[in-house]
Length: 151
Image (cartoon, rainbow, N blue to C red):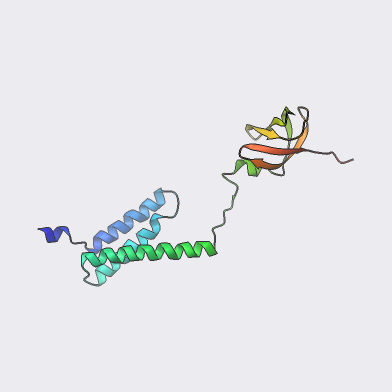
């Protein structure tokens, strides 16, 4: 009875691989996929050869480690590029753009209306409505300089 509980057949590994690969599609990131590949390879090895369950666990652990290390090395040399690298850096998206001050800059602080949000700004004293150019950002505060009109 105890022997049947400790048996890991190839189908268990193939089901685990399918579960991990589906989980990868549902969860953000690229993490479960490598364990799914390791489970798939372990299932193929267990299907092809009569391997004891202890060795199957060792194969799974070793293959998991190898896939994670290989992918880590590959991604360090070939980082993934995004078509929107500033997607989650809203303030960085405004650098270089020009806005009119929504509130005057007094004591170094004011605000601009950018998109659908009013953003706090830091810069030299300027009246409301003055044109400013965003030159940097510190957290959610935009660093601005006055726009000097061409003569």
